[in-house]
Image: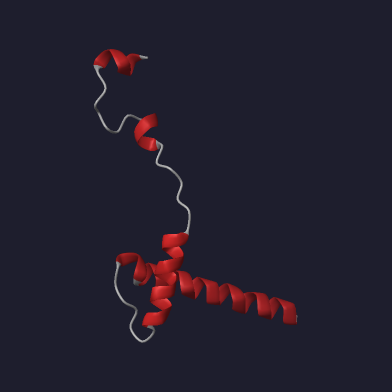
Amino acid sequence: MLAVVVVMVVIVVIAGLVAAYVAYPHRGEQMPGTPWLGDAMAKAADAAPLLPAEDDEMYDLRGDLEESERRH
């Protein structure tokens, strides 16, 4: 029973951190009351690796190909 309570508390804390990140640092704003937490979240987000954008190559979102290249 104690393990379930501890896991649920951890889940709620993680969900709260995600909500706080989306509400403030993700939009480029300072968190009120705890600016150090917003700075730490922004640094962690900047350090996280990103996947390369493949959609523009796969689906030709740039629109710079000629008609003959689009058919192949």
